[in-house]
Image (cartoon, rainbow, N blue to C red; front, side, top):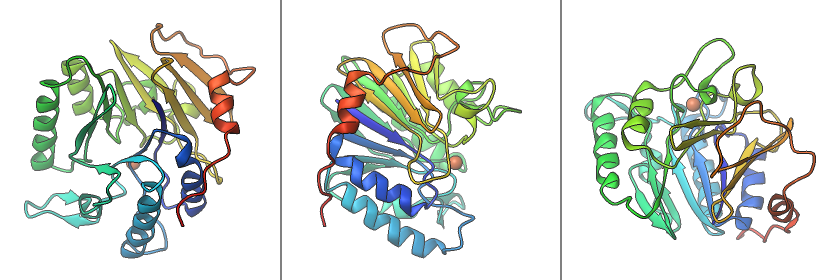
Length: 270
Ligand SMILES: [Fe+2]
């Protein structure tokens, strides 16, 4: 299974255009939070309307997984917590979002909402506990916008901007992979990285760059390899090997990455 991970598109329409063009090359596309941007000039209703259309079109070309980030919270719940109602309301057939857990092939995906208070946090804790009961024999991947605290994937260059709760859940449940985002600088700063390993768990955060192509991570589960592609270059890790730092930039693209990139993108559905 070939997965594409991006996050933190922050209402950049050129990046959504890129994602729409690329999506059909992948078995699964993951957008790990912050599709919208609280600081953008366009108001939130306009942003959600536009992004919803992109997500619907992407989900016509492949399986799409979307979780909320802190920039996606457009509403307040009855208990007074900020929530991403527009993501809860997504109903496209090929799209899974916050609160969904689904098995694709040999992999269980748990899609975690951004939580702003105890109600959503406890709902997420219950979802993880439920999924732990059925992970046996499956690869277990979480989609959680914030990476864990005290990880290079959450290092800003000055402090860890990660999440303590998810660090605790990772220690408790030891999932195979956590797809995250949120801390834009991590892959580009001293002491930071796009990848970490905590016990058996691989953590990924592709980071943020300006421009039309978001930094992104490809994971080929059959080969057990992950590659990070950014304006800085390409780095690759083998998922069945220990993580050894410093990671070198690849002098040539691994064949499977080159073949994926070279593949002409299918025409996105009109
Ligand atoms: Fe974020």
